[in-house]
Amino acid sequence: MVLADLGKRINGAVNSALSNTQDDYATAVDSMLKGIVTALLEADVNISLVSKLRNNIKSKLMESKGKSINNVQTKKLIQKTVFDELCNLVDCHEKEPFKPKKKKTNVIMFVGLQGSGKTTSCTKLAVYYAKRGFKVGLVCADTFRAGAFDQLKQNAIKARIPFFGSYTETDPVKVAEEGITKFKKEKFEVIIVDTSGRHRQEQELFREMIEISRVVKPHQTIMVLDASIGQAAEQQSKAFKESSDFGAIILTKMDGHAKGGGAISAVAATNTPIIFIGTGEHIHDFESFSPKSFVSKLLGIGDIESLFEQIQTVSNKEDTQAMIENIQQGKFTLADFKKQMQTIMKMGPLSNIAQMIPGMGNMMNQVGEEETSKSMKKMVYVLDSMTKEELNSDGRVFIDQPSRLVRVARGSGCSVFDVEMILMQQQMMANMAQSAKAAKQGGGRGMPGMGGMPGMGGMPGMPNMPGMPNISPQMMQEAQQQLRQNPNMMNRMMNMFGGNGGGMPDMGEMMKMMDDPQMQQMAKQFGMGM
Ligand SMILES: Nc1nc2c(ncn2[C@@H]2O[C@H](COP(=O)(O)OP(=O)(O)OP(=O)(O)O)[C@@H](O)[C@H]2O)c(=O)[nH]1
Image (cartoon, rainbow, N blue to C red; front, side, top):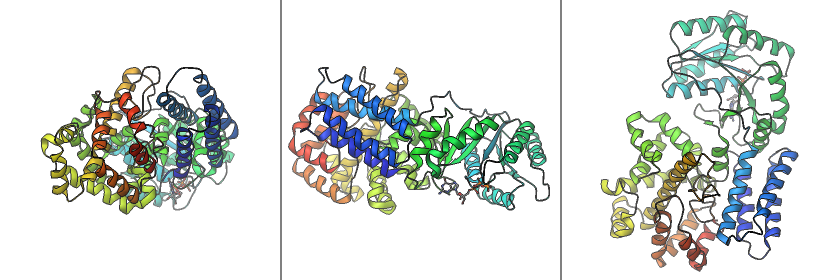
């Protein structure tokens, strides 16, 4: 899981500020900032970047001090400000990177040091484009390292990507040229050229890159950087930029490296867009990168945009067309949820996918892959037991007729609470769809899970809840017990999220629920910090 600990600590700092009623506002903000700053510094983020983030958050939050906004609005403001500033920290604010065009030749050249993960990333990118319908070929122009061609060949065969290379030719420029000519003749649309690396940034390496670049005339040059070097990534990125004008970066080995945050922010500071991150050795351990998606996953909020991107990759067009149309209209039905869950099961490493669903990433950290997989299967059983009418609804039919809940629970062999939890997750996703639509219409950066509130860019899909942190099976059981004792609670939650047309939760109801001791207790168990 990418930077799970950093996300947990930032969430912890924010949640403790939100739940702290003892301290005055300024003290609560200061203590939150202390927690965030320590977590970022320990993730190797550059001290001046951290200090800038700290000052920005503080000045934005203190500006609102004199204004007459209520408690709930203050909490939203804190969450949104932290979210936005974290996005700024990893955002290079550059223009859109290159996107290949269909029915044209698009040449992509890779550069980077030896062992950074170039060959692996070449194959991952080839698979990424092949799944999007491009005719993709791989060229191995690494004649420096013995075994480089064999490695690319093995990867390419496994991924079923056509490849070109030579065991005898020692001039990488010649191999690159021959490979490009061959694939162009055969009307390949994306041709990816892997080049050699060296252990250090040597003049010889830079010269070779320039020569290859001259003959292959790349439409995009991508630099591959190992994220485990932390903020040293800035210096490496600058050195390469001076010799080969690469347009984008892939950061590899973001799995399990606490320094990944440092690498991302360091690269972003050089104004070069990071386009993908590598999160493991497997071909599918590859995520397209955007600041908003990254921070959403970091904080466990879920990331509907990446999720649908992934779903489009593995499912056929007809399958997802209806769902995409729904999302574009700001809708997300139970049938969409079901399709999504089924596709997810096919999508490879659960750890990548779980982070995109609200609450699931945290569950994964707590209980592991096997338990999470069981929970996801349970979701599919529950959704399988619903009628077509129920699936095509927004879920409110279950509130109007609670007997449906019981029927579905029985049919799926699950508890009523399991069904209710799925309805809640679907509501959160529907809310995200709403906010994605609102953000597109408004052109601003809405926080995922937030609908459109004038001037604030939106409100979270759940009250004071950046995702559903720290849900363990035991907490689930306790919450289940409380829901049983207070059946009205679920009803009120659903009303709150769906009752006003989606997007923005009902503020009046939210305020009432905040005063409800049972609700507060349950929220505490879920780490929602109400
Ligand atoms: N954990 C993890 N390992 C990765 C990732 N990307 C690549 N690797 C591993 O890193 C090692 C080096 O990767 P390569 O693709 O061979 O690196 P390279 O840059 O092509 O190296 P040269 O061909 O020697 O220049 C391999 O063991 C890969 O499996 C990643 O995102 N996460």
